[in-house]
Length: 526
Image (cartoon, rainbow, N blue to C red; front, side, top):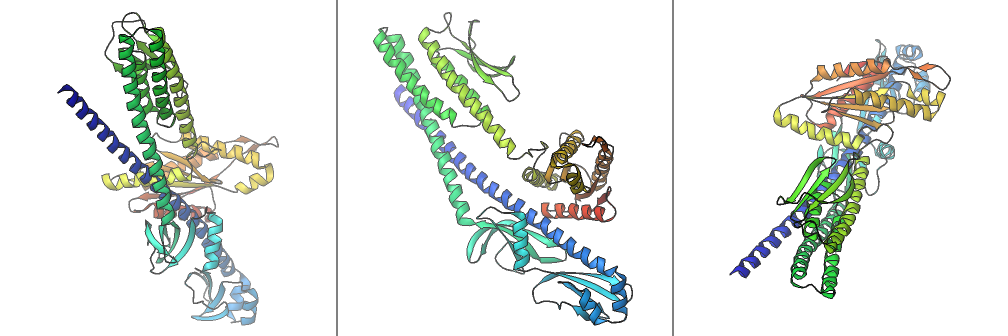
């Protein structure tokens, strides 16, 4: 009866662990798809930023012509030849609703900007939404194959906004779309990648994790069984040959556990397994793991022995020593048990160090190397999460995007190394000005951003103004022996009313460009 109960318990345990392994593998595949969506979102946003710069360039050219006295005189006198001489590609001149000179409106969908020239007429600039622009935006964003950027106008099989599945050139794709201009919901930029490649990579990750999980389960079960057999045999047989044979079996089982630990990168999940297995290997009744002087894990029942075997497990991320205290009845573990425990803990220490280094690499993937702030990928992920939370709980959030004024001249005058010093100083200022819930990021180049949860538009503008004043108050020693003062322009947007990540960033970016156009060193709300 007892044996049947043990068998049933073992079957139930294995079934439960198998289910957990499948769930973990599926979660790993879902995490990969989430990473793909984040990558496509970042690519689409980069392309959208480049598009905004193209529109700004076209607007600046048309605005300059609209303010040109020669253009005003030529329009007033309907001097076509003079206007044709002045016109550049994409520019046309109009008077009383008729085109006098310049490019004819094309059949390709385009973005048009018009500027009045007093009462004489207007200057129109046209940016065609064609393959030339598509190629330019893709080159600027620099996607890694097989990712691509495509311009989509009208219907089709690609998403209107957000992320979803679609078709491009009759092939299924995963896609993230952003609307390019507010008054043209049909015009959008779409980052795509083949869906087959995504599914195949997700399946490979699922299989790898599933194999690793199953191997871990089996090795843990084998280790526990081997330790139990070893302990039973040790007490039943005293002859050295038998003991040596059992020790070899346990060492082999513990080696499998060590391999399984080495394949894991979750430090907190490793610690209880290490403590429990080390206690079993030592034939002890209690084990405690200390981080510094703080107990973080306890296994077994409290032992009457207060003379533990102390084994070092390295340090944590903050440099605190990790110590494993193993309590054995009867005055401490035998020499054999001590040797096994020490050997296993040495393997576990290597696994913990690998997990710690993996964590460092993982953090570096979402951190800007120069400033230590969050990078664009981390900022967009945090913004998506905070926007979802704000929608769910009815709270507010604000986004601030800042860009250093005339930063190119600093690099040209003093060199890029000093320019990097300036960027680091700005990063320090943002970090010091952030609350614990805020996310400060460097989006790239001289562009920075702040995510401010539970903050409305007015509060975001106030925070941006404090940043502007703090930056203007910095006085940095320059290589020529003088002092350099740096200014920045800021754009602010908020939720509500803006209800999507893409729109929120585009609105803040537009406000930033308006601040630049109005003289720089100022804050503009979108």
